Image (tube, rainbow, N blue to C red; front, top):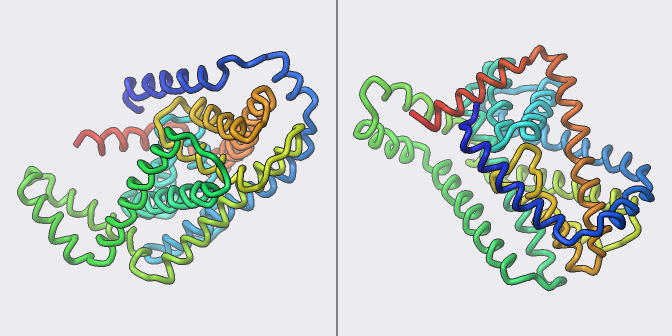
Length: 334
């Protein structure tokens, strides 16, 4: 399993964010807002959300094509199991679980599929920043949030640039990492290291074509707009209304915040930033808190339950999760 200190670090960070989210909250007002909400609006929100999950599956299917063509019907359960893993394990371990299950079911190497998953995450981060940038001219933003946006911009756009360079010059990149392997890796592990990196390079094949890059970007935009539509549906359950671009901003901010290590399910790191954004636009603290907590549950619960179902249907066991997290530990401690 993951290192114990990583787990407890995530718990402590979540505790801090929860304190910030709930500090000064009038619990009776928050409970009243939750008790009087019209939860029927969550149903179309869940439908739209799973359209986004299907779009995620199509994106991954598209990115995996140079490695192996896997049908959407076979890939969808793998995606759902992976996202369920993100919800019940800390440190986004579900990404590695997804790669492991794909290897088990379709014989796709973990290194290659992890490369595509990392590219997914980078494009997701770019879309989140795009949502924030679109909202910037329309909304006042605290200085500390602006600094965070600048930091994430450097991180995601920098990573994307590096991956573009690596994918555009595979022979040069291979020569560089082979040079380092020959000088830094013990001889008995050199073939293993080369094999892992060669398969990782295979996973970056999707970045060698401008058409493929455009398709990944557009699909990522569709995915996150669909999720924002769910924010909009859930908003109608409560007694407040903000423009759609505010929900785009909230979506961007909370998902950037969830890249911070936290307890499983992004406890606190999702909630505190979301509440803060809504308060910036005049939504009362009690209503903003109630809405954000209900939204968090509505995002977390359906795909987690479906992930448990697919675990049983696809004969994926908790031992498989343990093996996957053990692989992660070995990767971080060569």
